[in-house]
Every structure is written in C-alpha cells, then in structure tokens.
Length: 321
Image (cartoon, rainbow, N blue to C red; front, side, top):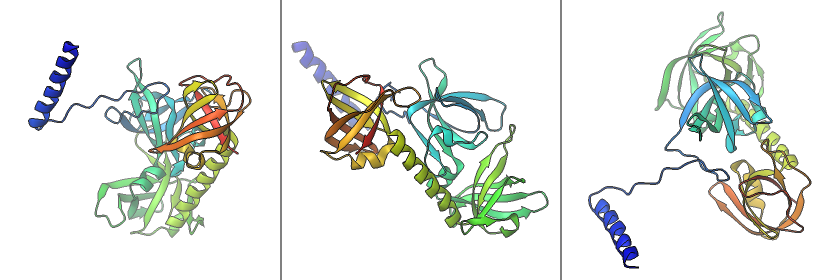
C-alpha cells in the first residue's frame, strides 16, 4: 500500500512540475483499435489521388497518388467517412477515376493502408467554402485557368490551376444542362473531376456554374444514401452483449437513425459481415438507453429473443420501426 501511495505521489508530482514549467502533459497516441471508432488525427496522411480499383466484398481498393505512377492499396475501415457529392455515401458511389482525398493510417503490418475517409473534390470545396474563380478560358482547347479561393478571395489556396474538359464533360446552370460557352471570366465554379491515369490532371466530369446546380447533386446524393440506409440499416459496432442486452455504436452516416432512436423505440438489429451486409434475419428489440457521443449514436437495445451471431467488436445493422 505504501508503494502504491508513493507511486501516486511521484506521478502527481511529475505532472505538477510539468505544469509548473509550462509544459502540457503528453497526450496518449491514438491507435486504430478493432471494434472502436478511432481516427488518429495525430498520425495520418491525406493524399490526393485517382481511384483505380474497388472490391465491394472486401472493401479494399487502390488509388494512384496524384502526380506519380505509384499505386497505393487501401482497406476501408468499417466506420470510414465516404463523402461523395458533398454528402455521405458508400463505396459503390465512387466512379473509377474520380479525384479525391484519401485519408490513410498505418496498419498493424506497418503499411499505410487503413483508410478512414474518401473525400471527393465536391465535398472538399463545399466544406472549405471554396470555389474556382475563372481567370481565363481556352474554348478551342476546352480548358479553364482558375484560382481556388473562398468566395471573396480573401483566402487563396492556389492560383493557375488548369481545369480540362472533353466531350464527356457536363455543364450545369440553374440546375439545368448548360455548355462551355456559358462560362465567363470572373465566374465562380465548382467541379467534379477525374484523373487520366498519369500526371496531375483535373478533367471535369461536371462543371457547376452556380450554387443551385451544385446543391441539386448534393440533394440527390443525400436522398440516395437515406434510401440505402432505410433498406440496409444504419451500420455500427457491437460494444457489448450480455444476455439479451445489446450495446452498439452507430457510425456517423447513420446520424438520423441515432438521433431518432429514443428510449422505448422499437428496432430491428442484425449482425453484419466484412462487406457490412446483414448476416441472417434481424431480431426485434427495444431501445432502453440512447445518447449522442459527438456524431456517433450510443444505444442499448433489449432484444426480444436469443442473440445469435453477434460478436463484440463485430458489425451490426439497425433499423427503426
């Protein structure tokens, strides 16, 4: 007991000395842990790249690091934020070739292959409230030279960016089809772009000449994801299972379900596999406790029958009645 008190005294004393010297206590380094929603922001790489391949069953794939020929493999963690058209989506929403930011982390084998988000260009520009300001146009070559900045250009991220277009590029104004000639110097644009398999090229799939057109695509993505979750259920981790009491953490994409899952709500819940697809038939249950932890839903569900197939740190899908 004396030794325990001495240890506490030494730890407390060391902390006091650190604070007295103006030093902050060292924060523990975050690590990805199976069954937990952890994004180690102190150890990550955010890389612009071009999506090359995707396997929906294993939720793995590859992307080409922009400006290089380097192919980088990735494994999508179950709680990864898949941000498509400035809204939540899923892996199948991303077209091969799309330019996006891939947030990578070091896996257990020391390779940087674990992925906690894919953020397409539309989401990045919307989140930062940025636009492409048109500086010049080359109608014959189908190119635009732009500055990426906020609305009034009080913050400029990059000048002299070249946006390329081709016969597959679609233009939108007032949420209706438009054309290249509708663009003028000084206009503010947003785009969805893809790579061309080499170098650093921003080839446009879509050019949005106004906010109305951009928001139309965002709204369509939100509706698509909402319908998908209605069919497949909100995904999450199993935190604990004791008797018929199941505790789950629902991921960010299921935020609407988490906020609506109040005490007394009837639900259905089922274990899920690596591909996040349900395994077996859902079980009925009742929410006995619910709270939001940041953007995550923490629920306790009393199941009506025997809990089969669930495993702690495993995946589950949940629906509200």
